[in-house]
Length: 74
Image (cartoon, rainbow, N blue to C red):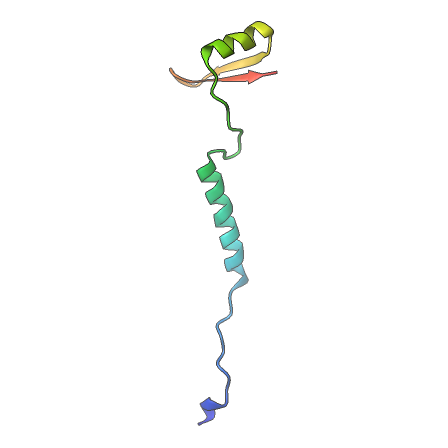
């Protein structure tokens, strides 16, 4: 009978869960956006690249593999 008078205690939410959810959301956004710590590049056709090159807009070119290169514009 003594238990009937005590109110039901709800479990407390640990505040670290909120921090964990925020961190997990941030990491998920970074992983799925594909821009973890960098900029997303644009795809450029060879003719556009040569136009940039003729205009002197190309700062440097990094060869990534046989099919891709990173072109830095000024």
